[in-house]
Every structure is written in structure tokens, then in C-alpha cells.
Image (cartoon, rainbow, N blue to C red):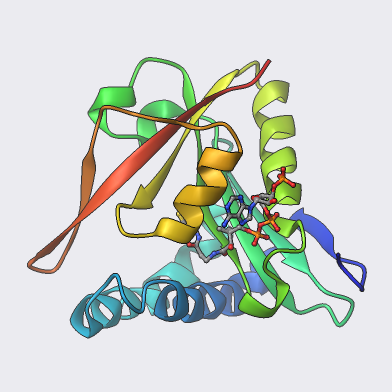
Length: 180
Ligand SMILES: CC(C)(COP(=O)(O)OP(=O)(O)OC[C@H]1O[C@@H](n2cnc3c(N)ncnc32)[C@H](O)[C@@H]1OP(=O)(O)O)[C@@H](O)C(=O)NCCC(=O)NCCS
């Protein structure tokens, strides 16, 4: 269980650098055996642009960027909730799905319930928008996250997507959820 107070809050413009550096660090840790070094570097090269766009991106009414901060005010987790299916692959478009994305918890804070706190926050946001189903995408080889999504009751979609990074293609899976 969590020994310190973790606060989940909407990302602010001043979080831009820490948020994006946290995400890069998480990709290096979580996808160490999933992505190539080249793919990681290609993603990291996008960071300056992402930082400069951050203040605008977090104002998008369909994208909700959240951070988990520890007692020292440091980001220990992030999550993006998209409440429009226009961000999703064609297969899901027009079907009213929300999207839980970019869910990353710092290794030393994993397994303490922060992922579930984000999932609850996400469902609260989507319900406030009148949405009752969502999709979560993961790299096919991300077994740890897949176990969590299966535990949460996600149904493995027959639809398989892929993330093209540079010249490499990484297979993805999608989990579909319904909220009562
Ligand atoms: C996947 C991840 C986001 C989960 O966050 P977390 O804070 O560690 O998860 P929690 O402690 O909140 O646990 C989430 C739920 O999964 C369950 N769970 C955790 N590990 C599990 C496992 N190996 N098998 C089955 N269930 C598991 C927990 O019991 C909990 O269930 P509950 O909601 O019923 O209480 C986190 O581990 C992470 O950041 N991983 C690395 C980055 C990553 O791969 N992100 C996903 C990108 S698609």
C-alpha cells in the first residue's frame, strides 16, 4: 500500500518538461525488451516539440492529461484520457469509445494502486461525458500491462494494430471495456 499521499491532478503547463522526461524514462524502462534502441531514440527526438506543444495540448477539450504527484511534488505517474474516438484507429472510430492512454507509473510506485486510481479518474471523466466504453492499446509484448488490463476485465479485441516507429513495426493489442 501507498505509504505517502499521492495526488492525482490535471497536468499544468509548467509540468511540460517533467511530464515528457518522465514519459521518456518510462519508455526506456517499460519497453527495454520491447523496442529497439533506435525506436526509443526516434521517440525521444520528438520531445522538444512535445514540450513546446504541451500547454496547447492540455487545453484540448477531448484530451485530459493527468499526473500523479508524490508528497515532494514530483511526478510519479501519468495518464491521458481521450473522450473522442477520433484519436483512435479506424476500427474504433464512430463507435463512441473513449481511450485510456499513456498510463505509466514510476517503477518504485508500481503495485500500490496508483494505476487503479488513474483508471477510476479516467472512468469518472468519461462518464461525465456520457461515455460507457473505452479501449486501451498496449504493445503485444507488454505482458505486465496486459495482465493488469485483463485483471480489470478488458476483453481482448479481435482488432490488432501496429505502431510504426521509423522503419520498424511493433505489433499492438487492444482491450475493450464497458463501464456500467
Ligand atoms: C501497468 C501499470 C500502469 C499498472 O499500474 P500500477 O500502479 O502498477 O497498478 P496497480 O497497483 O494500481 O494495480 C492495478 C490492478 O492490477 C492488478 N495487478 C497488478 N499486477 C497484476 C498482475 N501481474 N496480474 C494480475 N493483476 C495484476 C492489481 O491487483 C490492481 O487490481 P485492482 O484494480 O483490482 O486493485 C504500471 O505497472 C506501469 O506503469 N507499467 C509500466 C508501463 C506500462 O507498461 N504502461 C502501460 C502502457 S500500455
